[in-house]
Length: 104
Image (spheres, rainbow, N blue to C red):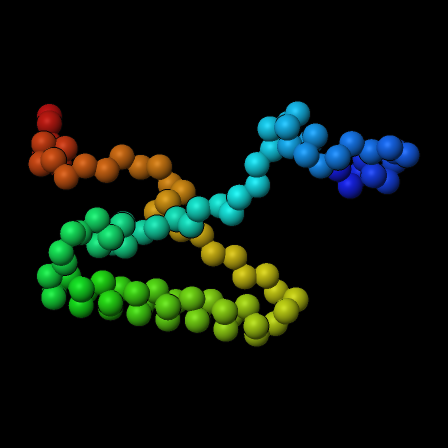
């Protein structure tokens, strides 16, 4: 908006005016952390087994990122899009046994 104002007006408003009037704030969006990474981060003193399991998880994540990058570089004319389906489908989740019993 500020750049459009500069192009169309002889005395455009300063960028800080736009920020104050429209309460604009620019930031980098937060990265979505997976449950495994969040769980590991919450541990105060992880055991050796938990650390090994998390290291394997990070390795698999990096391998997935490398594969995605290879797919993107195969043909620049083809768009490669990925989705976290567990994140975008809002399904109820419960580990309560009564949810799994059949009622006639």
